[in-house]
Length: 383
Image 1 (cartoon, helix red, strand yellow):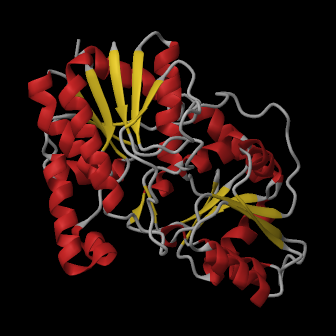
Image 2 (cartoon, one colour; image 1 turned 135 degrees about the horizontal axis):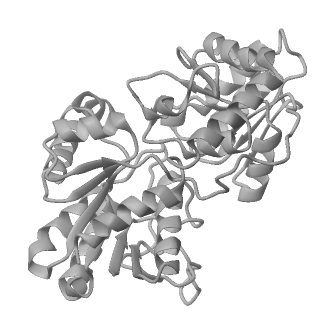
C-alpha cells in the first residue's frame, strides 16, 4: 500500500502526543512493507537526515514558528503548510492509495479533501480533538472563533474515514455531521504490552511531562505541591518540558520558596522522563483540554498512578478508573490538586499494584499495535 502521512510536526524535532503517534505510525507501516511518505514542515537542517528510517520525509514548507508567545497556534504556518500539501498532492497525488492526515491544522485537510476525487486516493483523518463553538470563541474571540468553528465543521463534512482517540471527540465529530464512518482508536502506546517486570518503590516525587502552554495549566502544580507539603513535607516535584508558561512556573517556584524542592529542567531525553515516571509517586496532568493523554498510559505501564482534572474538554479522564489507577481532581485549584496527590500518597503500594493490574488488563486496547490493525483495515478498503 502506498501511504502518505500529513502532519506539520515531526517527532523528535517537535514533541507532543500527535507527533509521537505519526512517527510511530510511519515506522510501523514501513516495517510492515508499506511505502510511506511523510509530508511536514522543515524542522531539521538542510542536507541533514530527518531521522525516520524507511520513510520518505518531505518538507513542503520552510521552518516556521508554530506558536505565538502566548502558546497559541499561529495562522501563517498552517496556511503555508496547506498550500505545500495542495501543491504536492496536485503533482503526486496519484502516487498514493491513501492520504492519512491530521485534522488540525485544517488547511492541509482542506487541501487533501479538495483533490481526493481527482487524484483517486482514499482520505483517512485523525481527529485528536473537536472543539465546541464556545471553546473556539474563547480561543480566538467572537469573529475568529466563529470562523474557526465553521472551518472545523467544513472539514468534518468532507468524505473521509475518521478516527478519534476518545469517545468524547467521536461524539462531537458525529454531531458536526461527519462525512464518513467514525472509529474510536484507544491505542497509541508503542511500549511493552506487559507491565514493568521490576516493581519500583515510589519516591515522594510528582512528575509532569509535556508542553508548558496555557491549556496544560502547569503553573497550577506549584502551589498544589506547596499546599500538599503541609501534610507531606517530603514531597518534591519534577516538571519536564518547555513552552511560554515555563517562566511563570519558575517564578512560582521562587515565590513559594521551593527552589530546592521543585525542578523545571525543560525538555530532556525520553529515557530520562521514562525513568522519572517509573519512580514517581504519581503523574500530575492538570490540563483543561486533552484529546487523549498518552503520558497517562505511559505512567500506567510503569505502575505509576495519575492525577488529572475534570473538565468538559478533557478526554484524558476516560483513561482513569477512580481509585484504581489514579484520581480525577475536581479542578486545578491548589486545594483540589493537593488533595488528589495526598490521596495517592495515602493509598501507597496498593494503588501502584492496582495501576499495574489495570494496565495489564487494558494493554491490548491501549497499544499502538491494536490501533494499527484497525488503521490497516481502513487502508485495505482503499485498495
